[in-house]
Image 1: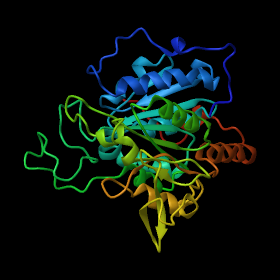
Image 2: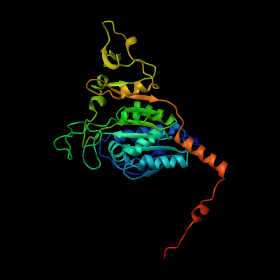
Image 3: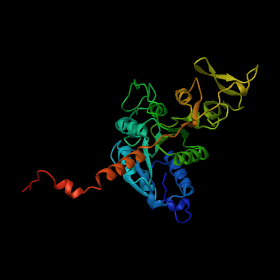
Image 4: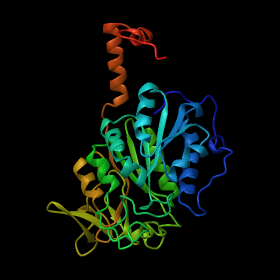
Length: 338
């Protein structure tokens, strides 16, 4: 969350670059880019104080298309680079864009530590359950049995659940949305930007070339009402085309119930974004037994890493003085290489 605001009102066009967007026609990335560019002016942050950092993958072309500062870095390391940037320049609004392969495979360790440190970043993870840029190998989120070029007999890996990973790292803001729902996607981007700390947003995204229909049960208009649960803080968990189904506790387990025959909305769970146990239970829900939760699963406040590190630097300066980098480099043994 930047503290330096834009001197004049900005529009979506101000965040669009002159670069040709080079994603496959129909890719879900187009929608995500459009919604981010649409929300950015609402945040009131000067463009020179916004930075997008990416790793490697289709999603990682994002900084080229945002008329802000940006880093197209190395595979999986975007969270580490963004952490250093935010620690050094806490006034900046720093966004990390990554994919399920980049962020959860080679970059899994870096993402884990950014989440648990709670540095003030906005982390957008595009999840299409495939390596798209390298033409269709299975990824850490591919479902078991997935047949790809690298798993011709079907994947035997149990897939990672990005939301469960983030909650397990005790991330202070965890949300999920879907690429084709522009309104909901915009709202999750706004909520992430307003959060002080690491805001993790999983965006279910289609790859129409190598994994078309990866989330069709949740993204198609006809099937979405029965397969997606839109979470709203303080409201009962209702879903279904007729809004006649809900989520209820049965002992220590969640269950889907049909309203009627004595069951009413008053019997359903009420969503609480600050309830860590509830977030874990919701994050583990998946089709076909349950609807997939969309929205903010967890939002709590905790001191951030960038606040702590800058407070510690100030404390050290007060105790030891500002220091002299040249003197530090020149101290001790030095030699000339010839």
